[in-house]
Image (cartoon, helix red, strand yellow):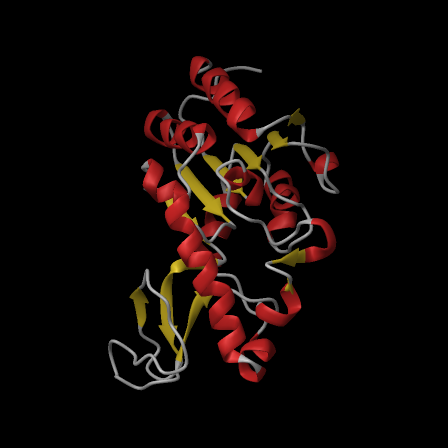
Length: 238
């Protein structure tokens, strides 16, 4: 296929991008993480019933970020962002900060971020890298007990959808890295892109997924190997 100079590129990334860095994924065998079912720690109802349990889950995940580093796939996507000649947007389902640490700028977190908290009383959003519990006061309104992770839980609306839909409406090249293909609406982005006229859709994953048939090209293998290789190809085609 010919060089895509001046074209619009959208990247969608999921847990497979960060897994090689050691970031634990929700959708491991049995749907468990730290011995918890995601339905018990990642829904509004779970937070209402057992807020301390939910806080403990996210405190552990937040602390775990200090032990991991971006991998070669994160670095390659940042290179693609910097050198791509057209519009670029990286949409990530991941809540870690590895893309930012690798240097990403044109990035949106559609499922929120571990290193932010939100106050249910005043709606303030704050950067946060420490533990939080039901006694922690809001940095803004000072109310205790109203803080929650700034994370999109099951049953909640993903963030930045207007910006994402605008990008998908004009995308020429859609690249999907490390997604499970089971969480919507992200699992439907490839079809949306194709319906909007995108003719080149590339999936990078360790194995085929339920949405592999929505792509015109598939690269199966570790993200740290396949993403740098693909980025080299795309930039050579400019």
